[in-house]
Length: 107
Image 1 (tube, rainbow, N blue to C red):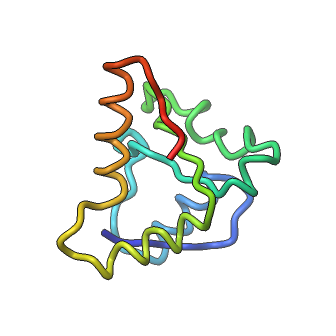
Image 2 (cartoon, rainbow, N blue to C red):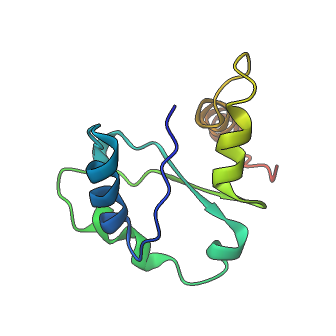
């Protein structure tokens, strides 16, 4: 798992910046989760979604995950525990189980 950070105003800018520095392809249609800090989520975040709403190649909006702390710190901390599942895998399993039972917990 790679964690890239860059100061941006939109996800489109972030995607372009990551393409410039990573050398890896960033496919919007393969994004499963977008993590936001609680602090950012309390602000108006709709502008971050312009890349998904305006791109016809992306049929579904990924899961929006709000975490109390920094998503970056969460991802970086997880890299110290190679025997544990990645946060995206854990969250995906949590959400799928919640959808099946029609219950979405706060964790």
